[in-house]
Image 1: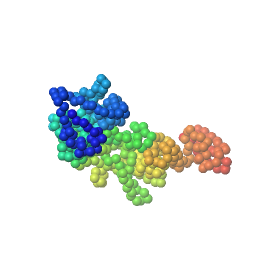
Image 2 (image 1 turned 180 degrees about the vertical axis):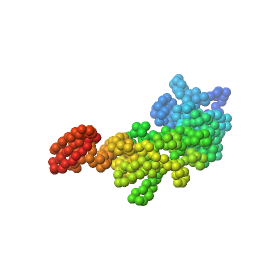
Image 3 (image 1 turned 45 degrees about the vertical axis):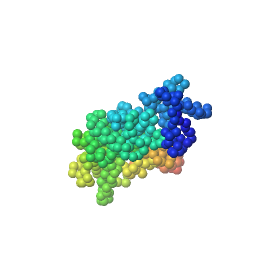
Image 4 (image 1 turned 135 degrees about the vertical axis):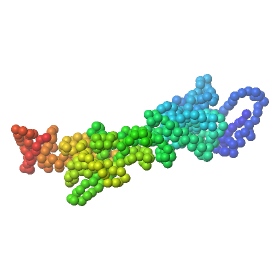
Length: 453
């Protein structure tokens, strides 16, 4: 038998490390099996112990709070005649579809996965450890030997030494073997991406797969902000298996202005070129993570024409280039395309857009301008930003089409076309062909004729 002072046990290593010297044998218990605990405690301790053994709320609880969780298969625990739950906490359970590999490590069961937290089950005690880079984790159920060294008291964690390094090297090797050995249909995107964070140099040399993002086709998309406009679906691709059109996301724009050649790099808006790219080269992708040296990654160059003071340009031509070399094959831009410098929270003109649209008015009143809108990080609310951005679009409409107004419109819209003042008179003219025309005047005697579109 042994008598333990709990206060000294937790605070003084000289006391808890010499427990065996205070162990005595009671001859009355000779030949008896099992373990008997006799604890002197106050009511608060008994209530806390009962809670820790019976609580089912394990979502935000630590292994220290639920000490019985993990002893399944090691010991059976009962409390007041009722069985205590000794299963492993769900956050440490490594199962399909996250499970990557399972087997033995030094005669102890080991499971490797992507997602759950890393745990060492030390003869029943669940000890949390840090996951590996790339989101990989493991569950080591120790039932024999000492494959690791643990701090004292045990639940304080795993000691960082050669044993731990050897385990984590073993885990990394199994991850590379499992992912590289799996068929492409079985490889999850996060597995392939994770290899390049787990060991970047090794992944660039050995990885069988890389991750590419399918560039969103703007005319087919439904969006109300830049985040939705630039959304991509990521896919796992295999090196050397197929020719994939990989592009850098940034568009290079080259144009002439007043006889001077200008060049803008890393512009947003490649999503609007998808139809032209499909027609000429195939489905476009962006390299998300992979060994660029093992792949062919190109860049889109756009040469619009008639670049002036406004936002609209003529479509011009586009080409693909590699390593900054001069493009060799130029093709006419057929679709409606646009690029911009950086999304704005308040004003479309702040994005410095170049827009090639067949129907310029229709473009301005469509959802396309909202690809240039991003309220993230703004000082004002999203509603305030959206109102400001919407007003800026209307300002562009009035600047680009000063003699037109679109249905439906209000008196406020008409007043804005006159600059200010209350509209006092409006005449409608109906030509034999074409749309009606409005002649309006305000309280200051200002007049204007507008074509209704």
